[in-house]
Image (tube, rainbow, N blue to C red):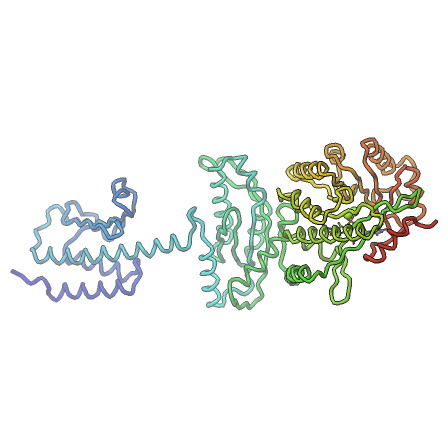
Length: 560
Ligand code: C2E
Ligand code: MG
Ligand code: MG
């Protein structure tokens, strides 16, 4: 009997084990060693196979690695099949030449041991690949955010980030693409678009998918032109063999890295491309917006207002100002609009400086209810003091429309202060989308059934359509001052005709008409000529603090 553990075998064993601890799979040292082993044992070919489960093995879905092949392997010498604890199947087959002389049992034993070590090696490398696959790709096969972070860290450690261009893109109307070509083709379009950008970027950077139709990445300035070209307009192939093409474009937020650039955290780059991305998204299709520090300042400002708003609300720093509405014939006060003022460090901040920010999220809704509650408190007080009260209108942002409970919440506040419903009016602005139009109709009807007045605010400012007044049963039409014809305008001008028509239509429908922003005597004349009798504007009064407004209520009539 020969010796199994002879010197040659131990040498192979040692070298193999050294490699499995240190060297990557396709390292030349590994290949050379395999070759040496195969020659020593006169092996002609060696295959290993890897299947994630026995079922995959049955269906032959897996991976086959050929580690050595001299082209003469015809006869199977040895075969091993191992099922791992995780149910992965690893198989190995060794071939020899057909007329190969027999090996000794000791040699066969050695071959078996070496082969088992190699299989273990293959399985381990395969696992590392799976980590790469699952760790750095999403389920659809796109690179994921971790791959982006890894790229940034690596490039940073090699000082290679300087002067690069980072981007965040959001595909324009991708649901339309899906509708047009079908969901499955849509997936192909997405992948092909990604590959086109990947190709344009080449080895100068990376593109990864954040999720959905949003991607981020980074590349070298020298490929900027071609990559930007794909952002603004790309013809992406899909279908059998890519014979069809569809246009794809994206809004892109860009950040140009300084040169040199030192990365603190990947978040620094993400923050900037997300911010410029938001701006890009608000602009027209396919726009590319480059980050600048003012965006950061703007974002900080927004955050600050949002934080201070909460405090201001809790400390009741918001005040209700009242602007009277006046009948221009009798000069009697007929109503008033409640307008919000923010008292900050002794200064009064006008709504235009904070309301658009509060409308980014739903903060505005809390402010509107705060206003409604304070107005109800005031009306209750006036009634209890025996004053003659006029109807007060409160502005409600269109942000409320998505809240299905808006109506019941409004009624709860009014009833809590036991205010007769006809003393309240809710001002809402027009909307442009169909969904909101439907909600608007529902809310206005609901308020009306409760006996609360409703007004359409700023009519004539945006895309006011006649549908808005024809289909929704408003009580009051508040006409923006810009819709009122100018002094010197001739009778037959388009704006004059439009104004006349809208007013008479609204009057025919029984609506009350209030003209906003009336400042001059000549404007009063125009109103008179068009039979509009209620005016709200600086001509009579600016929005007034509570005590001053109460004085107007008591006086009732504006002197000539
Ligand atoms: P709005 O509802 O159209 O209110 C009328 C605005 O026109 C008020 O501005 C008022 O001060 C101003 N105004 C009145 N008469 C004249 C005039 O003769 N000339 C000029 N140039 N302006 C006049 P204000 O108070 O700055 O409010 C601006 C907007 O902010 C309001 O427009 C309304 O949309 C919003 N707003 C104010 N308070 C609230 C609130 O409590 N909730 C909500 N959601 N929005 C509010
Ligand atoms: Mg208003
Ligand atoms: Mg208005």
